[in-house]
Amino acid sequence: SRGREDGHVALVGAGPGAEDLVTLRAHRLLMEADVIVHDALVPEAVIALGRRDAERIAAGKRKGCQTRTQEEIKALLVTLAREGKRVVRLKSGDPLVFGRAGEEMAALRDAGVSFEVVPGVTAALAAAADFELPLTLRGVSSSLVLTTGHDLKSRALPDWAKLAISGATVAVYMGRTNAAEVASLLAEAGLSPDTAVAVVENASLPSRRRLHGTLADLPALQDRTSLAGPVMTIIGDAVAGADFTASEPLRARVAADSPA
Ligand SMILES: C[S@@+](CC[C@H](N)C(=O)[O-])C[C@H]1O[C@@H](n2cnc3c(N)ncnc32)[C@H](O)[C@@H]1O
Image 1 (tube, rainbow, N blue to C red):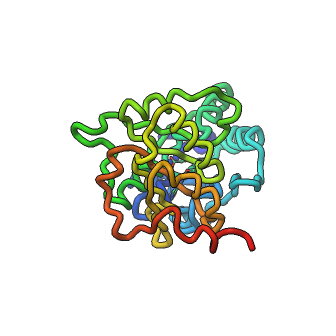
Image 2 (tube, rainbow, N blue to C red):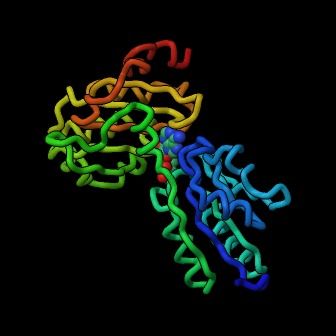
């Protein structure tokens, strides 16, 4: 067993938001933690699963609002571990999917701090479940691409656009504010404008909102400024198999959502 002097960091996936999508292992580590360092997307109900006396530190980051830089977070994790603390670094979804866990693991490794990684339900999977949407579908789609709408400008045509035309289902993280660019990249790569698109805000939570349409409708997502929560976009022929009965059309109500 570990002595109190040996700190330890667990990089833990909090899941997409619903507290009952937290794994049993994540729950146990939260109960054991002296300190919980959490991202802004992790809901209060999940952070509350830790001990009442655990220290809780908000580490950012939501769009446009950052409490600590990535450098500061890395330094904080190392410092806490060196103080002998059992630290849970709680990240939304899965820590290894667009979670910058790579940088944090490298810092912990360099500092000789013991750490482990606990997977979580990533947002794409929660969004697909909310739509009863098969991410792979026999004879239609046999691959799944997890990509981001973030930072597209700095790159040439990303390979995922090519994968999309060869039948992959594409799940786009952080893709609301540049939905038009994502759509045009895919259209340029040759994806049909009729390709089905499903969008979920706040997947897995009671506040979730579902929208659907086609690739031709996707640019309208950018005008949906009322979608203030995290948004997942799933594109591909397999999406056509989703249940759209509880979902609204992507193109509708654009005027109502636009600033006056
Ligand atoms: C920095 S990434 C973190 C992803 C996270 N590590 C994961 O595995 O889900 C943040 C993006 O994840 C997506 N996301 C996270 N939680 C979500 C949710 N409950 N519903 C929809 N999208 C979500 C959104 O695209 C959001 O912009």
